[in-house]
Amino acid sequence: MAAATSSNEKSSTGEKTRNKILDAAETLIIEHGFAATSLRAIANEAGVNLAATHYHFGSKQGLLAAAFHRRMAPVGSARLSALDEAKRTAAASGATPTVREVLEAFFSPFHDALHGELIRILPGLVARMYAEPPSLTKPIMEGEFAEVMSRFIAALHEARPDIPIEELRWRFHFMLGAMVQLLQFHAPLGMPSDEDALQDGLTRLVDFVVAGIEQQGASL
Image 1: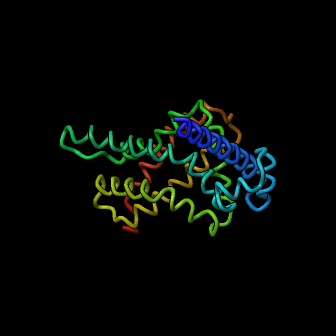
Image 2 (image 1 turned 60 degrees about the vertical axis):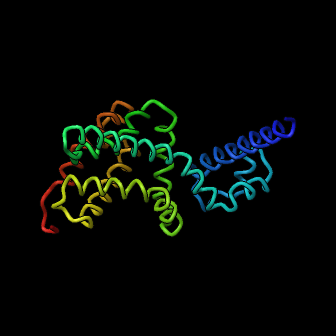
Image 3 (image 1 turned 120 degrees about the vertical axis):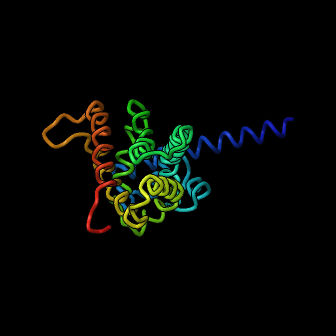
């Protein structure tokens, strides 16, 4: 029993140390960028020794991937749960989710997080990921989003089988750019940018993207 208690205490201590490092990395990388943030600076900010950062994450890139995963994994899970619910609801009447229903499932975690910590941190983290060299961040984002993107694009194709998968991928890609813009700037220039603006912007974004996904174009 004593051995089990000691093991649990070590695990708890290790998790606390890991989260301290992630918190420090998140803060410093968002503020200064990846290249300008050293592992030593992160360790100092976290109040741990440098060896702890190597032990838990292996490298600075591994730390960035872990910091991004910590914030995005719950978002991805919530998106997939919302998509599954949309499919169950549609299946009850012998249908499949519409483009709008699929996209509402994709954006639903942001509505749920409007007043929480995630919405205060995520815009800066996502913006930083897009600002860093693609050679660094694209592999991290592809690993993080592969399943979510695959399932949502498949659902869009079920809703609109007349639109080729490749075209849907491009349209989804453009949608993500609009989403990042909205998360960073909640309203157009010259308008108040606050949580109410973000709520309104999310609704407008869905309308905008539905039109973009469903539009007929020469690429078809």
